[in-house]
Image (tube, rainbow over all chains, first blue to last red; front, top):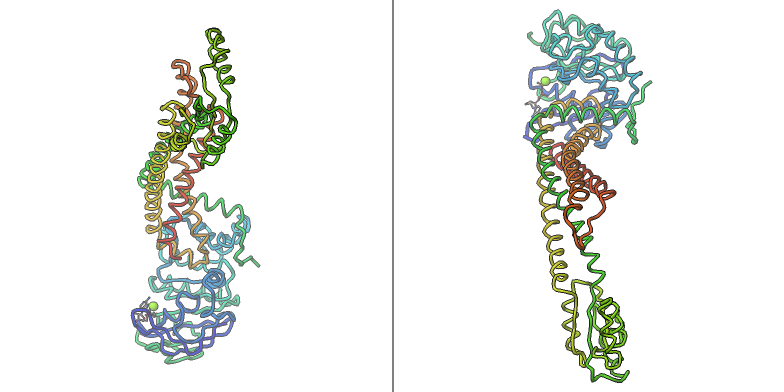
Length: 228
Length: 307
Ligand SMILES: Nc1ncnc2c1ncn2[C@@H]1O[C@H](COP(=O)(O)OP(=O)(O)O)[C@@H](O)[C@H]1O
Ligand SMILES: [Mg+2]
């Protein structure tokens, strides 16, 4: 699914965020990415959907070489990958329904198919009753569920989440985690950067720890490994 | 499985979506919209009036131009055909001369008598001793060159007199030239100002929506998908700006053509007929409005939407 070979990333301002990363993630895995802040976790995930390009090295996603991907092919790649952020990134003026439908409008789906599919994912994230609300009228947890619904509406094989529970209280975080686990159980690969010791230690998955732009640890059913 | 390809041909519903987004933006931008529509309105009003004037002036001038001819009277001493042929050859060798036609003094007299009607009968006395001269009628290929051509003709040996239309014709031709140049320059300047104002409005839309545009790309929107609503917005601003000018020009021309025409007798001025001219002019104004709008949005999208 994801293959990184000696990947380096130096930003234009001279900061080196990744310093030679080798990682292989198989289809269907659930992976936590942990590490101190500024270690390069976000950069690592952003390489996977061509938000950033590696300075050196190869990034393969779904057998597509992202360093060689043409600019105009990026939208097509993004439609095969769901992305969830800490700050939700919803379109503020659109309703819950419209936010999710947007991901299908860009591929010119018919309104009929869109309606059916959006209702399905809203059901999946248990938000069917809030379809007409706008993001500002929702709690943080609800907004994050909308953003997850939008991320999976295109049946992506890969879901990338950068600290999806970072802005949420513990109880809401667990709701989000159970949804992510369901998505993973249906076959979608999940890569999640997180700072939550609680979650990583209780819901055991593969853990990749990044420190100073290098893979410091890569363990099956690993632990968080840092102080909370 | 759903279609995830980037199709090259946009579906109708997608176009509908871009239209909705573009119009929402026109509505949301409030005063910015009002000011750029105002700029387009002013521009198109002036452009419309200029165009109506210029096209009519052009029409009148063309009518007049058709009649422009230079009459070359020959010395009475020029008797034999050889001399006359020589003058004809020299006339034809002048550049900017389209046609040269000989008119004998007999024919000249005939024409004179005819043009005078009943009073002309008096001249019939001259039949025996014709006081007129043999002449050539020369048509310049470019009527604005009449004076230059006439000057050249004057220097030909055997030419006694050169007459060309009244001075007013020359003035009209000159005036038309100036009006065309100044009118076009003004129109272009106005159009560019309006384009600039529209591109400014769209720029503000784009900047206000920078974050949203980033989110759209995250979800897999193509650049085209993001740009289209901005093009539509620009086009709508252009169309909105054309409404008042079209109404004004059509009703103004209607008044001029039907009402004023009855009151004032235009002697030789024949206005272009209201139907179809007013409609053609409306279409032209609308076209320029749309052009201004689209160009304005293309400019700012290119500059501020480095997607
Ligand atoms: N867009 C960027 N431009 C310049 N430097 C950046 C950018 N994004 C991140 N960095 C820098 O790269 C390093 C790694 O950042 P990041 O990947 O966000 O780490 P993490 O997510 O683990 O906190 C940090 O030093 C950060 O300041
Ligand atoms: Mg981060």
